[in-house]
Length: 442
Image (tube, rainbow, N blue to C red; front, side):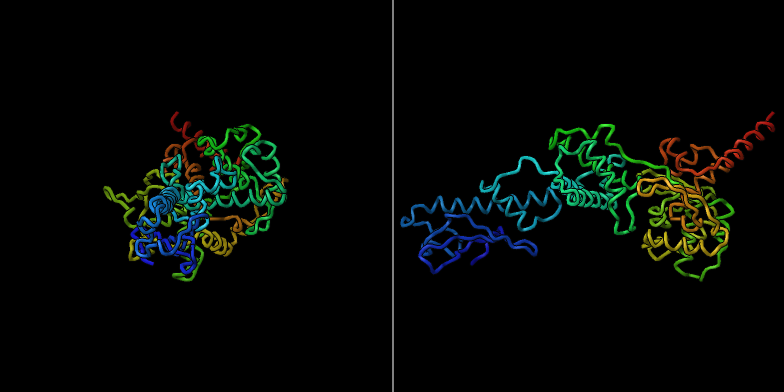
């Protein structure tokens, strides 16, 4: 059996029989597609093994139409394969490709519109291939976001199985929303946490679902717009997050840790976050290329990963020295640190100081009910606490919101004020500071 230039091969299934079916094989990567159509048979004496076509002989008057059929099959396979790769950014599975070829050849019915789960899976595949852009940044959707898309699809399938409800596009209405939210917040148990989802986690999955449905509507896959009704809302809850004041940051800096240990590295990374306001995703990307100097003034200049917005952050000699303590041969400071490891390690470090063992009151929603708990502060510290500490402390120091927002990247004052953690007592202190300034001016 000679190989053709295209990679599509034709051969006789039963070359020693009076009449043999002609089969086709297409090899790509580690896959082999075998394809066959009924009534595509020939007497072996009329088969040219080298050209993999029927012999052009008067004895077989149908050779032209027969060979044209083989050409059409070969073309259908190659067209379907290339189109799938271009559209999806990956190679099709054997069954996927066979279905596409059969559809193109008219032997399988083409679905006019995909089912809900099928569409969402296709949407996710496009996102993975960079074919969907973040509307805020104009850049391909991040891998972490795609991961949450897959989680949402998995939860929808779990809901469908448990409730014995085959979900369709027309089911996406406030009634479904109510059932799905109840399922996530009261019934479903997350394998990771061993608990049901809290409102903000539920809200994340509702947001993802609305993204899928909006895209389906825009592409005329569905005409249902009930997901835009008020009853199909995204759940949000004000979370009692903590921040570290100046005294606590100093206490963290003064904790004695083994030199060059992972915990020391995490502690220093966290402290840098407290003084720069950078997210952990940006701190991990920091390199000496981001460190600038103008008129002996040091500063960090970096484009934030989440928003694609450039920020400029003042840098003291102490912080610069702390950064360069961890400089690698590549010029990076904190490469390869996993977010969860940082979260675990910073709690472990903070637990070393008595100041973080004090209990704080935390209000949270569990199983749909609002509860209050007393929790040691060190248990509530995460990598994001550093950024919140920066914003809150700068507000307490009297910096204008607009100046702080240039560094944190918040677009609106409303969003910024939800982010900072100022108590009633803190507000009184700020008010007194401004009152004293007014008295001095007078």
